[in-house]
Length: 93
Image (cartoon, rainbow, N blue to C red; front, side):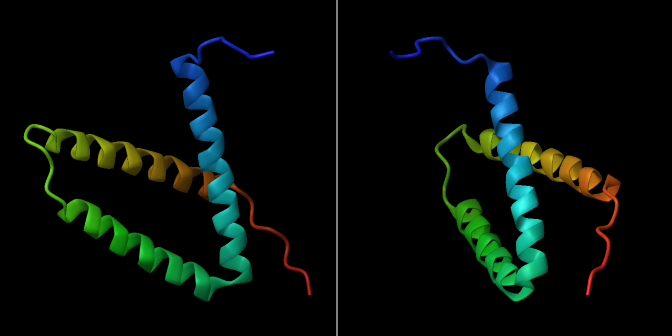
């Protein structure tokens, strides 16, 4: 049976937040296991971002790019605070 209920804005926000936390955790694991690969991924993402920023936006749409960047920055800061609040994992040999 098909679920026809509509997603509310809150439902979508919770799903996005959950995905962001999962990605954050995965990046932390990759940083521990393969820091060189993570650095390469970061450099590729930065190059992609520069390419996106260099594209010409339709007239009147530049504010959307600015809004998107402000949302990403706010989320990055929240994730950084979340990471800073974690206790360091015990070292094992």
